[in-house]
Length: 195
Ligand code: UP5
Ligand code: MG
Image (cartoon, rainbow, N blue to C red; front, side, top):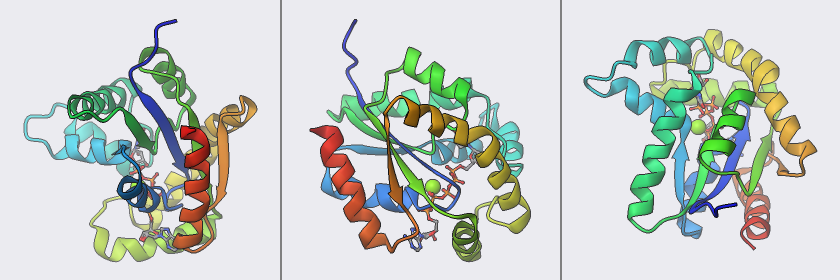
């Protein structure tokens, strides 16, 4: 098999589990790039001339998963851009969250080294998101959208995490803890994954 030029680590967990927070810390410690699928979609949504703007806005508000072709294209573009700058290790945050995305990315882009799974209860996540919603400006940080995101997480995204666990490609991290403790556990998992 041909070697992939990339090293990928997926960062998963429910809405508000703390994926973005931990990724921001990791980029300061390791030579890697943080690519958030949600951020890629929000960027594309507000890009002038994008033909997907309305579609993305609707999917995000409804907590639905945007068709995989769109998201994978955006992720690949970012990976290529970073790669040109000499960075070949990526935290892919908030992706894959549906089985078809998982399969397509592993086949067409590259198989991931492992997954960091931030496990957190819905009560905690709801409180964090409502608090962030006071200032985030995100159109999905309201009770109605959050409820829909939770349903999608349980029904559509958990099966992906279960599949990764079955394949022994997933490290579960307790994301209920304070950010420093979560970071310690995350770094331990990273050191193991990167060898
Ligand atoms: N906070 C963080 N850690 C904390 C801790 N340990 N203790 C106390 N507070 C903590 O954190 C959320 C808030 O909690 C912050 O205020 C933080 O300070 C605090 P954050 O790090 O932002 O959590 P994160 O897990 O990143 O939450 P996010 O809301 O970004 O997760 P989602 O997965 O819901 O959002 P994402 O941007 O990934 O996706 C949004 C939507 O895009 C999806 O619903 C979907 O519609 C669409 N999408 C797709 O269609 N396809 C994709 O592949 C990806 C997304
Ligand atoms: Mg995030």
